[in-house]
Every structure is written in C-alpha cells, then in structure tokens.
Amino acid sequence: MTDADAQLPKAWPFEEAQKLALRAEAEGKREVLFETGYGPSGLPHIGTFGEVARTSWVRHAYGVLTGRPSRLLAFSDDMDGLRKVPDNVPDRERLRAFIGQPLTKVPDPFGTHESFGAHNNARLRGFLDRFGFEYEFASSSEYYAAGRYDGALRRVLECYDEVLAVMLPSLGPERRATYAPILPLHPRTGVVEQVRIDRVDPAAATVFWTDAAGERFETSVLGGRAKCQWKADWAMRWFALGVDYEMSGKDLIDSVKLSSAICRVLGAEPPIGFTYELFLDGHGQKISKSRGNGLSVEEWLRYAPPESLSQFMFNQPHRAKKLFFDVIPRAVDEYIAHVERAREEAESEAGSAALLANPAWHLHMGAIPEQAGSPIPFGMLLNLASVINADTPEMLWGFIARYRPGASPPSEPFLARLVDHAVLYYADFVRPQKRFRAPDATERAGLADLAQVLRAMPTGAAAETIQNEVYAVGKRHPFPSLKAWFLCLYQVLLGQAEGPRFGGFVALYGIMETVALIERRLADVPREAA
Figure 1 (cartoon, rainbow, N blue to C red):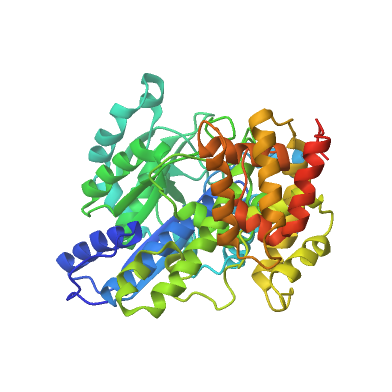
Figure 2: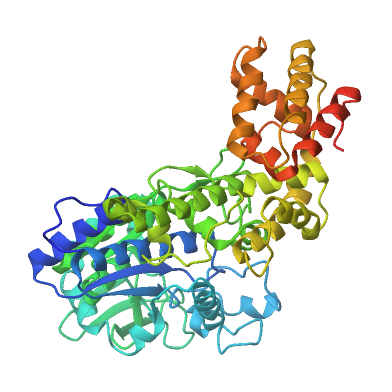
C-alpha cells in the first residue's frame, strides 16, 4: 500500500496506523517503536494476550500502510518491589523476607530460574511465543543496571520540581507528604525504598534520603541503584526509548494523562495512545484477577481455537464486552465467516479494499492459511452434539462424513479441532442447561407439518432448500412471528433457547433423522435434558 491509495481501509488498526504514520512523517522518523508493558508479579493473563495482539495488528497495518520498519518491545517491569507474597506459589514463608526487593532479586519459589522475576518473565515469553507474536523482550532491571536510562534519570533530576508539580495534585494529603518520583534502593537491604527525597543533586546524579531507622543516605540514581515511581517510570521510559505507540486499558486513563504530562516535562512527546475497554464477567461485573471472575486463556483454548480468541479481541476494542464462556461459540463462527469472506475477496480484484478491512486478514497478518476456516459452523456442531448427546468426536464425524463425503480429520484439520472443542463445550455447558418444553397446539401443528414436508424431500437436499421449506411452514401457521417458530424448533426439539440456521442443521443431522426427532418430541416431549 502506498501514499497514493485514496481511501484508508475501514478497520481500526489502519486508523491507528495512519495516526502513527502522520506523526512519524512529521518527526522525520524512519523506524517507529511500539511497546506493551507487563507487571511480572503474576502470570500472563487474557488481557496480556489482548494488548499484545491488538498492538501487533496496528503494527502490521502500519507496515502495510507505510512500508517502513517498526519494532515491538514487550517490556517487563521486573525491577518493581515485591508488594506481597502471591497465594499460588510454594515456599511462601521464605519469600516474606524479600518483601520490597526488586522481583529480579527475589528467589524463584519454583526453583527453575535465578529469580522470581526471571521465572515470570520466562512465562511471559513462553506465553507470547505460544501465539507466534513477533516482539523483542525487555527487562526493566537489565535496562536500569546497564545504564540505558542514566541520561533520562539525570533529566528527571533536572526537572524534579516540575515532575512533582505534575504528580502532587493527584495525591491525597498523606501520600503527598512522602511522595517521590525517584525510589532509591537501600544499599544494605536492597529494598526499593518508598521514602521522601530530602534533596536532589542533578550534577552528581544523586538523591538524599532518610530510611525508617533515621539513617541518612546519598544514593546515585545511575546504574540500577534507584528506579522511578511507576507513573514517572512510564514517562521516563517513553522519553528514554522514544516510544511511539502504546495501548492501555480504560482503568489507566488518569495514569496515562499524568505520565504524558511528565514525558512532556522531560522534553518529549508521549506516544500515541489507544484506550481499550475492560472486560466484564458473566454477570456484567468488571473482571478482577484477584476475584477470578473472568475467563482465562487456558479455559478459552479448552473450548475453542486461538483464532477465535483473536477474533474476540479484534471486535470493537473501545467497547466493554462480556468475557465468559457463552461468548465463545459466536466468536468462533464470526472467525469462520470472516475467513470464508476473505477468500472470496482475495480472488476478486474489486474486493481488495474489503479484504484489508476483513478481521481475518488482520488476525493472520495478511496471509490467511489455506486450511483455516471450516465448512461447518461451530454452533452447528454444538447443536449436533446436543441432539446426539455426543461423548466422543467420532460420534460427530459419523454425521459429518455423510454430510461432506471424504471429510476427515487429516483433510479438514481446523474442523477436526472444532469437533474436539465442541464435544468438550457440549459436555460442560450445553448438556447441563438443556431444558425441553412441550409444544402448544399451534407449535404441534407446525412441527407435524414440517415432518411431513421433510419426509417428502430428497435425501441429499441442499441446506438452503431445506431452510426455505422451514420458513414456508412457519408462515403457514399462525405464529406471532417467524422468530416464535424458530424458538419452537430450538426449545422443543433441541432443548435450548438458541440454535443454528435450521436448514443447515437438518442437512448435517439428516432429513429422516430430523423427522424421527420431531416425531419423538411430539409423542413424548421430555421435561429434562435427554
């Protein structure tokens, strides 16, 4: 894509990329730096995936839009002091002695790395590598110790009063009395000291402070002997590294404003920001890692492929979304639909602009794998599993092979993954919720009519043909609306409140099998799940 392109693709990563391109051009910057931040006091979570994935999509769009190079820095704040001992680690008592020390100085309770920070950093890298993200890993401890921040830290001391002027109005009276943008490390204990700074010496690059025992110290801020308080640290990092783009959640809006102001005090423009909305649990409450009321990456990947998680993250990042198990099937089928459309757009010269706006194109960084997507929607597989009470993938494959001759796990690898996921999702979420109801008089007449129509159709009738007949039956009977007719099909036949495109389901399950299902329900509608 070149500057000559008249219209920007209608996709939010391109909108973000254009903002960055205009800034880079104005500054004469050849290469731009993207950044994502990570606090390694805990394990990577689904929000970590979302932030890195979304940043990666903007980065890819930037490369397509400009043809210019960029880098993505995955930054770990591993020099932060250990605030408390996590509940989910072994040897907790031993770690209590290291409260306040940088995470890279705390022993690894798992015994696999040189420090707790290194352990969690390895988990972060493994997490990002698992999804194929392209990034450079950066450690706060290493950057401080290597002197990469020394120039920026001197600048913080030169602007110390101005930095304080930014921060103090945002603090309460007690915190204001002791707040300092610089945190010295205690020369004997190694603790990251949260103390008031008595005096700064920019020329010597030192700070003067008093510890809790009343002993006074002069500490150099260089070479990892001090670090910045976190909002100042964020700003200092932007200034030192020349970060051009960084995302953050809605809960950090005020922090971004303060860090941006500090960055300007230091003498640089803060990066272009992108504020994404937070996730909600199944009850519409904000997800909290401490409460564990959300959905983990591992849980999502038990029930659906990673492409569906990417699809969920791509959709409307500015909008708060429920992140719970019931959103998974829709995300899977949205991904499948986008892949199918992307292939059509790729084959059509007129569809190139639409292709660049297609989420699947972004999720796969412009190169959609040949075996991506599925000929059968995930929702359809779940409904088939529900009707036949599928305990194994083989039960589903028996119907799939008849519906799509020649289909097998080797020939349809993505479908094979969906089948495995569908069996697990059905067992854990669909089967426990199945509730059949008896049809009323109008519904009984409609179902009997449908059974008669289906019985007269050829065995290999197309899904669309069947769907048209289902519509026609619904229109022949006095239902309040066609929606009421389809609710009847789902609730009476499938035992659930929602269902698939019914013609497609009949084609997959079988016409005569569906007739038999209708007759069973009309003869003896069970009140509980089959």
